[in-house]
Image 1: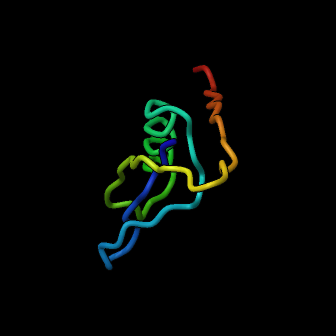
Image 2: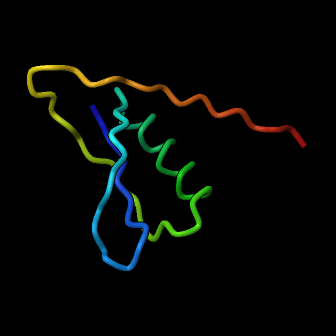
Length: 68
């Protein structure tokens, strides 16, 4: 499982929102999407999470883009 963490303030602390993704590619897509939508994101990373006794909810991000 993979999670996205961002630095979104001057503290330099990595923060995540609890969303987990089954593949690194899906997590990276979500990270890039956050980076483009949130104006305060200074940096982002994808980290691997190991489940401990239970599996967290898994989200699949479907990005709909408006055609020009």
